[in-house]
Length: 332
Image (cartoon, rainbow, N blue to C red; front, top):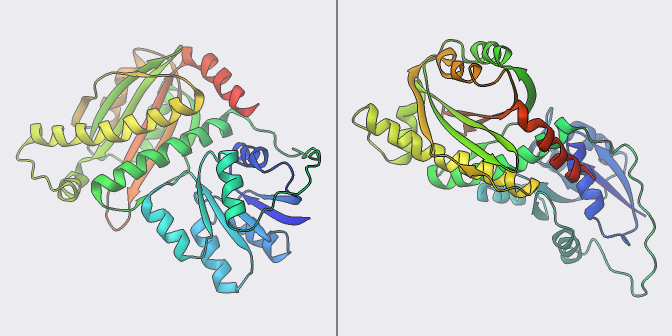
C-alpha cells in the first residue's frame, strides 16, 4: 500500500479528492487539515505521495513545500488548489511540486496526472475495486460553501492578477449567517473608520438571490489606478475604474459559484453604491430589505502593494433553503 496524504483544511475538498482517486490504486490514506499536521504525517512516513492544498490556516501549502525542501523530506507532491494564478503554478513548481491540478479535481485529470508522474499504474488484469472508507469525512454546510467560495475566488483572483500584473494573495473565505445589524457591527469594527467606495451588483437564479458588495478603501485607489495604468482626473473617472474592476471580480466569482452548484445567475449592472462613505452608510440599505443574510466574506490583497479588496456575497434569507439543497447535492 502506498502511503497517501491528503492535506486540505476543507473536509469537502478532502472528500472530493478521495472520491476522485482511481478506485484500483492501492493507497492507505491519511488526512491533514493544515500544513503543520501534514508535515508531522510526512515525518512519520505517512505521505510518500501528497495531495496538497495551498490556502490553509496555520501553515499554507507554499510553506509546506519550502519546509519539505529545508528538511530534505522525500515525498512526491501534487498541488490541488483553487488558486489558479499562473504565478502560483510557477512558484509551486520552483518549490518542488511535481504537478498542479485545479479544484475541484476531476477524476480523469487526477488519474492522468498520477499516471504521467509514474505514481499510479493501472493493473494489467482488472480486478473489482475494493470499497474505500470515507470515515471522518462528515461535511457541514458552512465548510462546503466555504470550499465552493474558495474555488470561485481563485478563478476571480487569476483574472485580477492578469489585469493588474501582480500576485494576488488569497484568504480563507469566511461564511456566516448574520442578522443585518450584526453584519453592521462586524464590518464597522473591521474597517476602523476608513472611508470607502463600494460597488454593488445584484444576482438571482434558481430561487437563489442576493447582492455582491465590493469595498474599496479610498486610501488605496491611487495605487489601484497606477497598477491599471489609469490617471483618473475626478470622482467620475475614478468611479468608472472601480466599476470596471468590480465587474471582473464579482462576475468571475459569481460565475465560479454558479458553475459548481449548477445554477445560472442573472446579474444586474454593477452600481456605485457609495463613494467616500462610511461602512454604516453603505450597508444600511440592506437593513430595509431583509433582516438576515448569509454572508461570504473574501478579502483579496496584492503582494508588494498596500492594496486589498473586500468582497461580500450577501444571500437573502429566502435563498437559504435552495442554496442548502444545492450544497447538499455536492456533498453527496
